[in-house]
Image 1 (tube, helix red, strand yellow):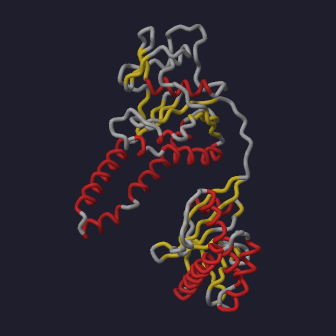
Image 2: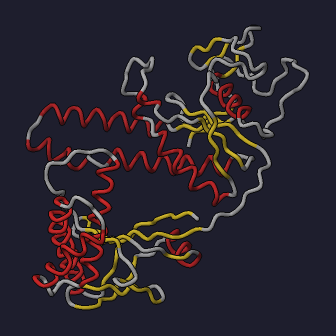
Amino acid sequence: MRVISYTTKLIFDSEFDKESVLELLLWQKDVFNECSKVVFELKKKSIIDLHAKFYTNFRKSQAKIPSQIIICSQRECLARYKSIRSNKHIISKPIEKKNLSIQLDKRIYSIKGDQFSLISSKGRVKCKPFFYKKLKENWDKYRICDPLLFVKNNEIWISLMFEITEVKIEENSVVGLDLGVRLFAVSSEGNVYDNKKFKKEKRQLRFLKRKLQSKGTKSAKRHLKKLRRKERNKSKNFIHNITKDILTDIKSNVIALENLKGIKNKKHKYENKNVISQVSLAEFRRVLTYKAPFYGKMVILVDKKKKKKTDCRTGKIDGIRKGRRYYGSDGVVLDADYNAAINIAFRAHRPTSFKAPLDGTLNFCWQAVVNQPIVCKTI
């Protein structure tokens, strides 16, 4: 079972209903901060000890706050402190909640048709989510889990989570996908996925941010505030577009990726050490993995080896890679990224989606022209 989420605005019947929900979220933030002071002093941070020490006393002093809001705040507070312990963070004072948000449960909300009924500071209020095409498809198709309610720019948003049952996928063949800096992705079927326009806009945006940071004036800080999420949003849009194209184009239903965990912590040969940090490798793998089942495909990971130096025709490490070129020991020049993608597909130990000759001849379909990709596709 998997869960996917879609975010949308809530539409209220009146401004009064909206303000009453905002007031309830303010109450929840105050409850959390008071609860955090108690949890910080507890030696054994369990829900039983917290409830015994906090709930009754707070309920007497703040009778107007619904009991379920207090219970939800207790659970959220304990979860935050559990994350702090597991991440081995050291804190010297109780944590404080600054944003307005709450994880809803069945006692706080109910759904009838396409309408929500929420508790608020003035009783129950009704509202509707703003439906766009993809959200409406999932609303009609899947079961809804407990959503998250939060405030952004003085608007109330809801993150709707849908429970998707796993579908068993029968494997037919595998395609290798090599990720890189110069070209974002190259498949073993011969397709190159990149976007020069996105890279240009990203360079311009980073240059603009550096110039504004160096000024340090009030006007520069105001402009920086407007740009703070622009690069992240552009990267997200690029990842979603490129994963859609990959899943639509490939013929196989198994996609092999290298396990690149920790690659950004190692020393690299790049002149600009910030280059590898700008490539969204983990985000690409996450999006591709959760989208693949919708297209009847699956993603697997293979171990990272010296695939850039391995000749895909012989499986031996006897060639030399120089930029986009791979020079084999017999003098044949291949496209280096394509050669690496084929090696990844072979390491999955499954039938491949391309036909490889078995007689060891040099008549290969993946032989590349020097400094020219086999298939150049720009999204």
